[in-house]
Image (cartoon, rainbow over all chains, first blue to last red; front, side, top):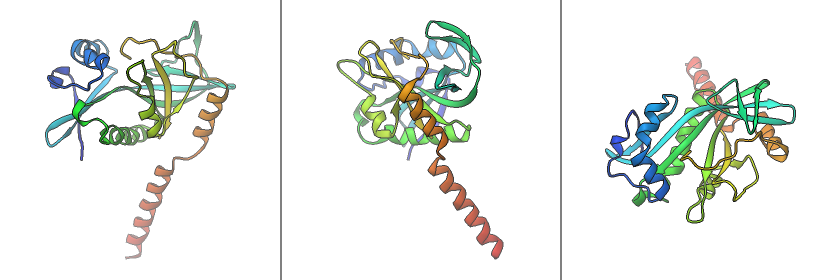
Length: 173
Length: 47
């Protein structure tokens, strides 16, 4: 069983590696600055028998229902940039929990820990009256997180495109 | 997200339709939990 603790510094991840180069670089070079610069992100580690098994970062967001389409807004901003347009967001709002980062320790990947964490995040989202878990599922020529999120029940919110390094996905909690 | 190129354009077409469908359906887990809570409460009241 995993135990979760909210942390304030990336120092707890000294020696932690997930095996995905871009993610490991981010964790050890940028995560601390990232967290200090924006307190709206919440950083957690998952432990089993005192050992760190995984890390994840979450924040809030929302979908705003317009006629026939949804705005997809990070941090619950009532207004801001959507694509190239600056506009007011008005309409029915559906709070979301954004999974900004998720990394499982390299030697423990593909053992179900990631799925267990997604289930825990679903419970967390429901307790905060969120409707969805959302994620930018990373993909490049060497690695793709998309199959993992599909397996967890996430569905795509846009067409897959090589133009972008991620696919926007959501999961109804 | 890692400083990567991501797309936060409005959600349209079939994707918006799927999102709307998901919003309108109740979460099975939530419903199941609520039923269980009610069942327990009912049993306790009988005692």
